[in-house]
Image (tube, rainbow, N blue to C red; front, side, top):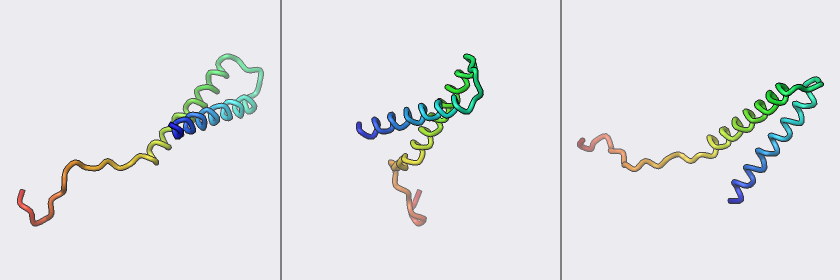
Amino acid sequence: MKRILVLVLGLLAVFVVTVGVLLNVMPGPHKSTDYLVIGAIATLLCLLLLFIIFITTMKKPQPSYKQRGPDSEP
């Protein structure tokens, strides 16, 4: 449970930092479409980061069968 909480808080921090950086980078005054683009980019970055974390920490599945040797009969 602690690992999930750390993951959620980390992704939330990445989202907030991304939104803050993009608000400062984009020239003002901001329109509603600017906020939509900023939110979409921040969400995309968080989902990409979550996907990378899941892929790199995923365990290899254990096969439920045993492989036969080269001299065994079919």
